[in-house]
Structure formats: C-alpha cells, structure tokens
Image (cartoon, rainbow, N blue to C red; front, top):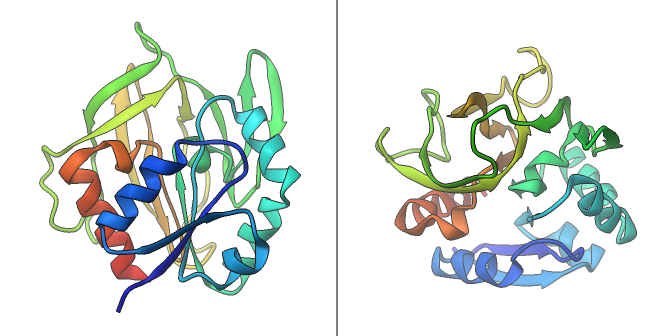
Length: 210
C-alpha cells in the first residue's frame, strides 16, 4: 500500500530533493504547512538546514512544534532530517546563544570538536542491532553529512518514551548522534535524500515502518 507522507514546509530545508527521494522510495508526497494534512498523513518528515535558532523560529511560525507533539501523542510517525533532527532535542547552543528546541528528547545540540568544520561529505555510522532504519545495510555503508553541530551525549535513559531508543553514532573529531529510533519518532543527522542508494534504502525502510 502506498503511504502518504507530508514534508513540513516551514521555510527550512531542501524540500524538493527530499520530495523526490521519498517519491522514488514509493511514497505519495505532499509539501505543505497545512495542519490537517500533516496530522492525517501516514508519516511526517521535518527537514532542516542552517541554524538551529532560525529553524525553530520558522517551525514556531507555522506551529509545527504542536503538530509534531500531537502526532507523537497519537503514536504517529515523524522523521526529522539534519537540523530537523536537532530541533527535536531540548536546546541548541550556537555562538554562545542558547535556543529552546522541541524537547522531545533531552540533550543539547552543540558545536563539534574537530580539526575541520563543517563535517561535509560521506561517513559511516554505527547502527545498533535491531535497527529498522538501517536494516539490510552493510556496516561500511556511507551517508552524506553537512553540519558543524550535533548531539554529543545521549541523555535519555532506557525505560522512558515509547520504546528504549536505538541510537546510531558516527564520528567526526568526536562521536555524535547520527540517528535515533524511538517508537514513532525517528531522525537522522545525515541527509538520506543526498545519500544515493543508501539513503533510498533507508527511506524505504522508514516507509516500511508506517
């Protein structure tokens, strides 16, 4: 059965590449900020590029944080991508300025400590056993990253939330969270829509969970 997916349009993110990638993966895709469409879709994708604070400002302008929270309260799937993943955490700190995030997960998005930033290009990830997103993908599979900030410490304890979260890690100077699977709430720091066949396989895996 074809799944209906809404990409939340709040003024951030490469929406068209995400739209094309999800369509190739087999979804029926709509790009909109309409609350009814976002609530009724089988899956909601929250993209994001640029600064944490700007993304949160755009999200709140369309009351996107309420849509995310309402969907999750109903056990309905949400996928965050890049800064769309970061804003799901409690806070982001950029240039000494702290911005409140959606607070779906505890934790802080902060600057990576690495010789070269941004972290731009292909990198491997360390996915845990039982991952649905990375099912069928080899450990040597590479995904495309573009970011200078990330979550360096996972703070949610087991036994909270929908299920015990599955956290995937990557490393650029320091380890950082590359993906999270937490019941209906999933997210990737990398861009699956820019990750070629690997990204397409991951998006198909996500659609298979809907």
